Image 1 (tube, rainbow, N blue to C red):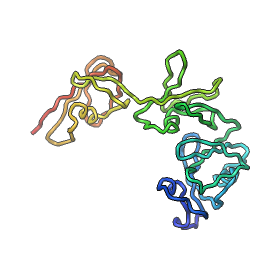
Image 2: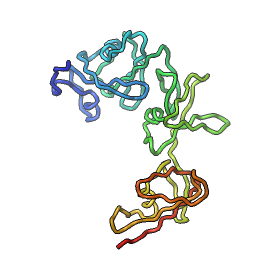
Image 3: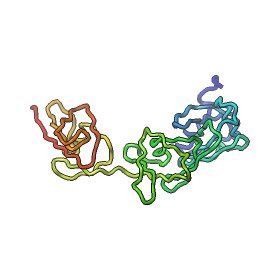
Length: 249
């Protein structure tokens, strides 16, 4: 397979992305990932492979120790048993996920059911499955009658809790003050120039222009703190920013 010309291989994901029909004959390039959504490309000849063929092509043996899911373009996962077949020519099947596990876990994200082959899942992965911008959204475990629980990007949430968990992806919306004016931010972190442009939208880096940026009531406490070019600040509700232009010309 390594001797195949790249032009001889039909890239299924590229075909789906381009909106064209996947050709009738192989070989096909597919993507097989793990619980961290780290994918690697594989080449398979059969247009209608079994789950076992996909696992074996990925070098995952014995196949009965793995759960294989096919991932559709909309992010939905569907379990594919070793004896079941899937048609690679069918629009929407781009990738597969393989878990070394003997059980699956069901949860809900934004009201949509999802099955997962690992006992733990990260907040970042939940955002990916929800199809949202990871920098502009946060994921919460919905707890009826109580405050919802934030699931951090690098947190590994345990799905083995009793019952099916319900998660919600919520756009970040933090109220801060920029030069005394209330402003709503949709990110947990901002760079120096992003803060500058909150006060001066047309500001660009220039040898003859600088901005003095200070902030207070952040995670560092209430004292006044300087923010300089190249730095990033973590955003907290109620922070106060002061941006002052300094003309060096």
